[in-house]
Length: 198
Image (cartoon, rainbow, N blue to C red; front, side, top):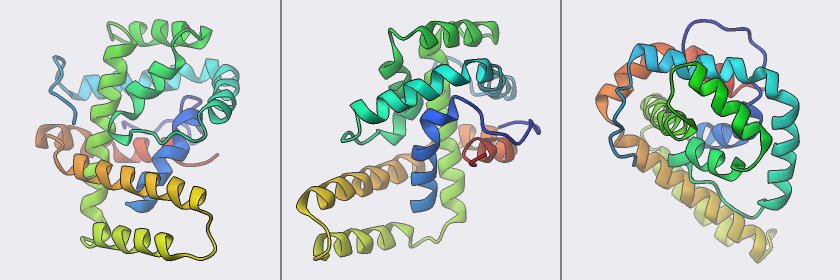
């Protein structure tokens, strides 16, 4: 989101990277009290950087979540706040909240809502760069899934849920407030670095 940080993977992204990549590869938030300013975006990214100290805990938690929730499709429009909600009660949640507060956020709820807005605006920008027929291509891919003789009904249902959720995320991204989009636009390089594998 901001100026160059080191290239390596951010630990919080271990929870989020597969979801980020899914939307980017395929590829409504209410107004928040806090403006999405340059400083807010920098503070959000700095929180993610500072969370590197929690990497072992995030990796363990990511494995746990993958086992417990492998059949659930994420809500891409609320990806940060939903992920944080699933972390509540874990020791890493309190430590991450301390880090977020150190960077100017009142709590993790505010930090997660800010992340949702940043992510939504980022997706809107990425969709601008994609083929304008991306939604039609996704609909065609969905039809292919339905007609595939090589997939079980359970596999079709899982892929259908993922595709439909991604299409909803694309629609939601189109409605990202223009001021959020313009605030996020200068920070694409650092945002993309969070979704890159190590």
